[in-house]
Length: 169
Image 1 (spheres, rainbow, N blue to C red):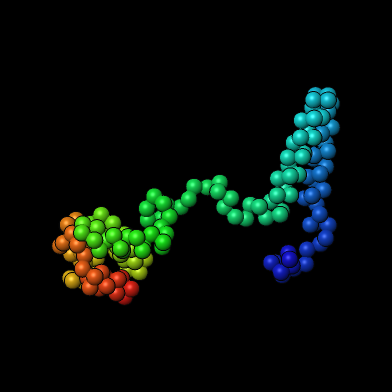
Image 2: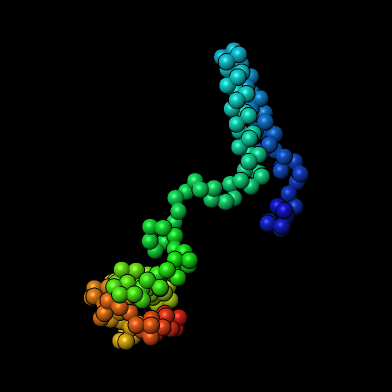
């Protein structure tokens, strides 16, 4: 494998050297702990060597290759990861009386904001003029973040138009 990366063969003794140095250091450290601390020192040294060996074995086995939930989740567009299963409920309730303003409009604004920033490098909230020009005059009043929507109820035809425009952006 080292030959594949560098193009030159690596001598066998060079690949074993780090393991030999680490092993010799562990044995020397164990002897020094035994001389200085007696039996408690030997126990401490044995514990440290065992923990190091188990950590190394875990790393070699590939346990550290995934996230392992040690890091915080990446903040996406909201405080929790978006899920497609919620869109059925959101669209169904968004077409009801006053449902557009509470449920569907914020979701559509997030989708449009993501599409505008990814494809056109335009912010829906900060570059309102450019965003309005890209979205179009028919759809912009329904998505304008600084103005209320034209109606609290979203007609199905307008929703279809908003989805088509989102797909073409």
